[in-house]
Length: 569
Image (cartoon, rainbow, N blue to C red; front, side, top):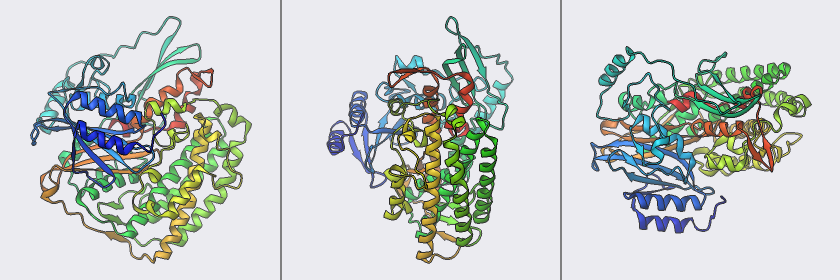
């Protein structure tokens, strides 16, 4: 559905007729409280008609607070303007109206709320949302770790007692006639996290697949509210997804800085932009190498993996960590030593000169195109329907990038916005990629989109280095201490950053004494796992039936490269 940018103000006005406006957490956000199921459905129906898309859903146990109930916070984004609309809904008992029919992207959130908070959607959706998506049989029944009426000690005792009981094997689903089930995982033959894929195959064709996650559940959100203060929660945020520590810590810091109204020094904003783009660059070049490896083009793969190592060493020279850990703080950035601009510039320029011809050659190689073109197609309408985000969505023609749509920090600077706009006009390489091929939604499109973003980010970091020198920034610490105040007790704020996979979202509510009452994390992979399934199963695309054969699954899966840990939390 295409947005109607002229009428969103009418929707906001109408929202006030079905709910009550509350003080918003930030200037680009509108918060409306709704307490009637019919009004909730009416409001969300209007948002769908205007192409607002779902950002995240937060279930919160507020039974000990003023309203004495569970609450659900639905966060939507305007498709073209820097505007969030947050709907606060008061749950009666433990049941709530499902919005899945309006927004299929609700599916993973409803399953998560069922397992972690014990909230159940109204029938008939209740029959579809059964326990076990996040918490498997190894957890006791009715074990809801995010409820606040059970202590950590009680949960540990229940887990220990349940672990002694025999669990048995989980039965496989029954295949359709002529098909059979092929289970893969959860343990795989590589250095990757656990996840189970139940393929229903007819011959070599993947007729359906059930993606079973949750094996990497670590209780992250409970740890936030039981162990960390607002000022040190960035330490846990770095551990949510091991390949995205900077994006996660940045989104967390953004939420707390908004909540505490902490101004971030200009050099810190600048440095955050440099480091966020470096995280994007080294991860994209890793995926380009892995895709070349998956089609047995080892010369290209090895050359690209070598450049990845150069980038990791550059990261360590700047931050003391190969993966850019330990430098973000609430209120700013702390580096081990001043930035060596000349070293960074020389390294990135050399990388640009070496990687561009490799990628240009690879994308034109017939052997690579044979495997990647028209393989694993995610159509634009399917991407929109399931709420796909980040790189996966952009490769299917959905223009969704928080650096452009919801800019903050250094990304508000016109010079930076101009560089990012190039990604949608012309990729900054000597022989531009065909833009049409970058939006087809297949493996090739996801490869080209990664390459395009890699080269754009390289240019952007070089621009930021020039701006850094013009700004005359000195030193290695730029920090404004954040001071939680009683006025913010049980207030919440939204934080976000465009990581290399897509938008990373943090929703943080302050408890008393500067601690965390609730921290909801939404990694982009949570929305993109359902999109992977749609890219694998047979469907009609541009009037033709599209199928994926089982040997192509590793290639399609790598072209998405989603995080198990970021989903399972």
